[in-house]
Length: 257
Image 1 (cartoon, rainbow, N blue to C red):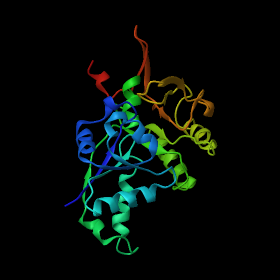
Image 2 (cartoon, rainbow, N blue to C red; image 1 turned 30 degrees about the vertical axis):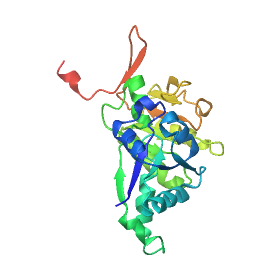
Image 3 (tube, one colour; image 1 turned 90 degrees about the vertical axis):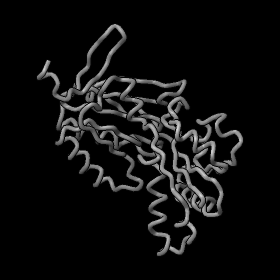
Image 4 (spheres, rainbow, N blue to C red; image 1 turned 180 degrees about the horizontal axis):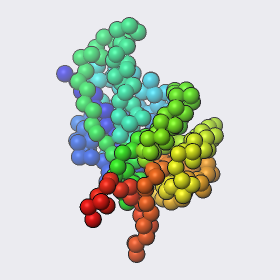
């Protein structure tokens, strides 16, 4: 039985690549991905057959990976971060779900799927800043390419009313700038202006940039396509030590101190 590995390169540096993902890469001869994700893996993929498809061709990537695996080829579909978080894993299963009704390759259902957990950007950014997601949190993608903005806006209001710490994935793109400012204005209706905001650019890579600011002072100019934005809740707190500034979100242990 052929295997299709669904794995992730992590947030950037290969030190964050889990051992199981390394094993799967070693066992795979064919790698399908957006080119940048394979470049991040460096020497680990030097001897592999690479199939690089650009952004916007996610369906084609998933279909190609399934076809290669159905042919009996050891294949990995690679994303960044965690492949199950705003990434390619769901598309593989959606294709499998629609295979019979959309006249797809009948051999897809003979493929063994192995989904390997990765490390997401939210974990990398949180670790750099202290413990901001130590209590209830959520993630919201601000991209309205696939999800209508009306749906995203409802989720922003719900997360604001629920006082969740919020990670914004896909906060901006070259053609999409206004959504982050709109999200900021919505959250200012639910939490203080000085709520801690953490901005992580090129996380775990050589040119990593971590910026701490407030919800009021957050601007679109601070963010690009390789950025994650993490907004604290009403209780998220900044502290200063000799090492620098940290943010933590208390869980209630203060009542026992």
